[in-house]
Amino acid sequence: MTNRVDAAVLWARAGLLGFVAFFLGVVGHVTADGLLPGPGLLAALLVLAIVLSAPMLNRQASPLRLVVLLVSGQTLIHLVLSVSAGHVGDAASAATPRATVLGSLPMVDGRRVGSLQDAYDGAAHQTGGLAPSLPIGHLVADLSAHAPMMVAHLAAAALVGLWLGYG
Image (cartoon, rainbow, N blue to C red):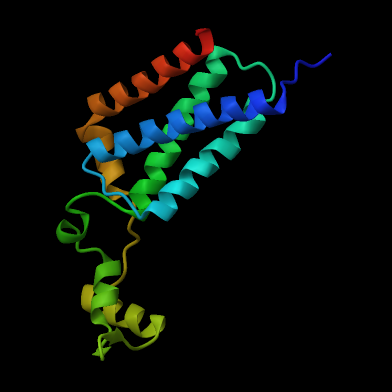
C-alpha cells in the first residue's frame, strides 16, 4: 500500500520546497556578488523548482530527501543564475574568447555583421587559437577562494531541510 498524498497537499509541499530552494539559491547567488536576470527567467526558475519538486514529494518525504532536494535545488539555481546573469566584474575582468569574438565583428548601423565563422576565424587569428572557457568561471574560482561561504550556504540549506523534515 502506498502513502500517496492529496493533490492539494502535494502542490503545497512542492510550492514550499521549490520556493525555499529558489530563495536560498538566489540569496546565495546575490551574496556572492551575483547579478540577477530579468523577472521572466526568475519566475521560470521558481516554477521549474516547484514542478521538479512535486514528483519527489508524492510520498512522505524523509528529512534526508528534503535535505538532498534543497541542497541540489539551491545549487542548480545558483548555477543557472551564474550562467545566465553572471557576477559583478565578470565582463570587465575576463577577456574571454567570447568577448573577442563578438568584438571582432564589424558594426553597421549599430548591428554586428558577419557570420559566426568569420568571428571564430578572427578570434582564432588574434589569440592564436580559441581555448574553451567556462561560463561559470566565477563559480569555479569560488570553490577554493570562498569555500567557507559555500559550506555555510549548503549547511543552511541542510538545516532548513532538516527543519522541514522534522517540523
